[in-house]
Image 1 (spheres, rainbow, N blue to C red):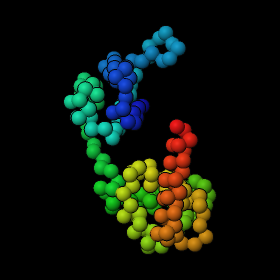
Image 2 (cartoon, rainbow, N blue to C red; image 1 turned 30 degrees about the vertical axis):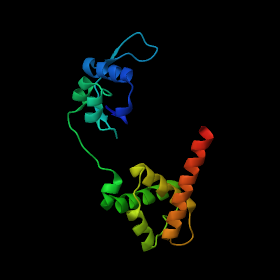
Image 3 (cartoon, rainbow, N blue to C red; image 1 turned 60 degrees about the horizontal axis):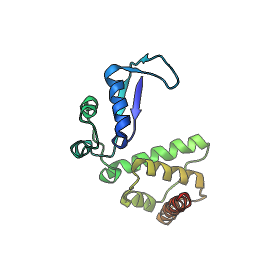
Length: 167
């Protein structure tokens, strides 16, 4: 199978050591078991931490880095590839509308311009969540750039409020 490890650059040293052992020995002992099991797994890892720098600063194990660094693919943040924004937005709104059994929203040209101008600090996840919020808002008319700003600000305010309430 395939094991996807997200944000591998944030792993603790202990977790890095365990992962390295698993990759080298191709065996794991499930929690609560006394018996190890063999693994046949492909590992795909992702991070927003520059592992080369973390390696130099001592935050990431060199042996694990070289074990994982077989094929490296750099995916720039969404703000650096604006040509993907409209494609992804269209994909997300259609898929989510179908999922919720709703009609996909319609948009004024100004919304598409606003989508392209926004920097998307949360990258593709933020765009997908925004698309879902838009589909669920179920507007009765074509959305405008004003709607875009309102929905975007709503998500920021909710994020700040949930951060405050969890502190």
